[in-house]
Image (cartoon, rainbow, N blue to C red; front, side):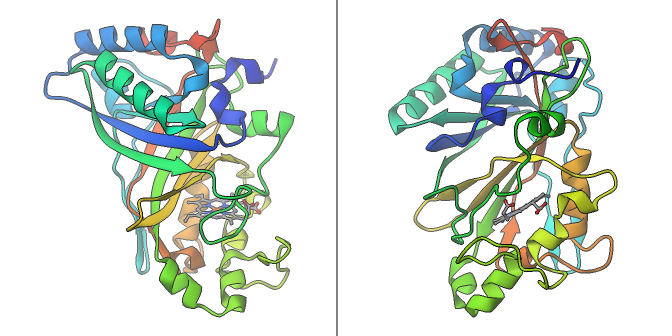
Length: 299
Ligand code: HEM
């Protein structure tokens, strides 16, 4: 029996909420297995599934003296003239909402309930831009698998306390939109590999085109993943909070390595106007009776 959508945190498969807030938490100087256990018990009991998506990083799982098969820290990787840093943290939460008030209140509730076991390290407000577009103006998510294919790509298929869970990759990219807008229109289309006018794929796009680098069916094994990236903008800087769910982190990592030129020295054209500044892998536990099921990490 494969996993069902009902076993997964709903934010993994649902379309983007109008607003998001991407929170990362670190282990504090006062963290220990005892207060982490207590904080996660409170989180399990209080976090409603429609608040968003919760994921645990390797540092947290180790601090609990537990093991999640397949969970590893995000690797720092580089290519010619480009880099993908690792900023692995203990926990990531994507709050989902339709207005700022609830994101504000839930952030405060989380900080209080986590006490000094997990310290809020970073918060980034994200939003849905127009009809699911990246800030470059290109539609993002077109080739996402749907329905049963999305479940197969994003959710762990079996295992007690594991079925319906997912591995997320979170990577913050900062765009240089002034530079991107300075490219001729044909170069902008060629760097994505799709025409902005009709979102059609460009058959003879260069090998550096993002959708050629990332063509999911061209990997062995195939690298289908559910991408729910969200734009962000603070007025001074802007970019993409890249968020992708997979039944393992391998799908994402294989694509990222090819984007960095590891296979053929061809670097993804995205790097000509954008660069990642964070990188983390998190295991998103399944749900049981509408609450987070933390039995796989001993909570
Ligand atoms: C600045 C960061 C990024 C931006 C703005 C971006 C944007 C896009 C856009 C516009 C598309 C075409 C439409 C679609 O199918 O969604 C696309 C496709 C895709 N992207 Fe990205 N992307 C980014 C980073 C990444 C990263 C880091 C990965 C994985 C390591 C990735 C994986 C994919 C995949 C798998 C596809 C679908 C390719 C296919 O099978 O046609 N993207 N992206």
